[in-house]
Image (tube, rainbow over all chains, first blue to last red):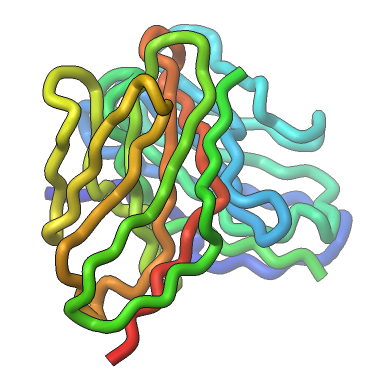
Length: 113
Length: 114
């Protein structure tokens, strides 16, 4: 079956520009997560969505980061006024229920020049 | 707060030798434990999980792990590795009754040599 998909696979942007990263979770999975993977910080949790509940934004590093999930399915992570330290691989994952195994997408590699 | 420590950043091993990748966690409440593998330029793939029940769990590709509550460990083992097992391995924990967000260790690079 179809797994988690993410687009674009690679994104190069100039410092100060806004970027949008997209995630399509596995159909029927109610929980959706965003993580960031960078050389210095390893894998970090960013944000979590579960059904119609308010998202857990506790991992977002600054107010330049935001995310939404429309219709309980597709999610978009937006980074405004990108900085060089935002360069990383952004991973999306989904799960049938919180606490169960998460299935990861291939990631979006963001490079801020 | 929960934390995960992977004691070895790199583990070199010869093909067909056994391997153990170590993982210790810190948590004051019950946890779920996972091992993920990441091949170069790919996303994370679930190897195995411990949610409850038997403390010895078997996963894909011949890997297994044992949950030891008293030692707060979840070490990953394979009796005989292949070149294709060369990858980065991540141990992760989530609090059972929480949102399910994963706390990851720093990762262990397994280098299998011919």
